[in-house]
Length: 163
Image 1 (cartoon, rainbow, N blue to C red):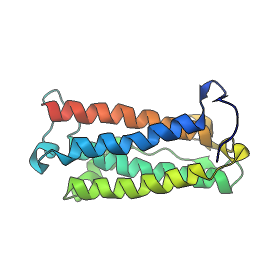
Image 2 (cartoon, helix red, strand yellow):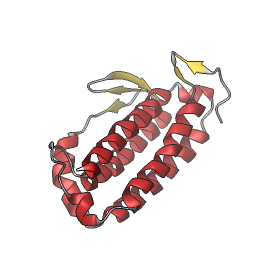
Image 3 (cartoon, rainbow, N blue to C red):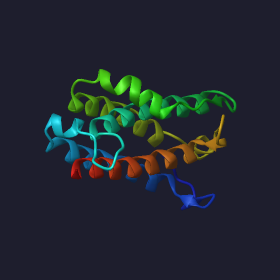
Image 4 (tube, rainbow, N blue to C red):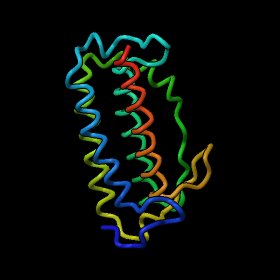
């Protein structure tokens, strides 16, 4: 469990990041739970992804982020490849027949990633990988990216469900 300083390199402490990662589950479940599947699949009026596509993207991204974290923790500065988010959403989201099932997949992956992050020591938070477009990233930086990514896409789901 992280026991280091309150801030690492100007970013919130990992424990604060973990709180943000945990909070996404409550927000995401509340948004999806009360919505009919047809509403979740309806494209927003202003364009963009339907809420169901965003949930599928979050599940795919959670899997990718988990692999990246595991690579950084077990290899010396591994190469972290980017992925075409739009391409993945276009190709894979239509394969998901039920948004609630996708949400369950996301939850299992998120819980596994949080367990991993909770088990890290100070040095492990600073382990690095080299992203092909973003350069050097630490595990702590990856966790922060995940939390920021959540907020961005929760807002996108709210917008899609609003019409």
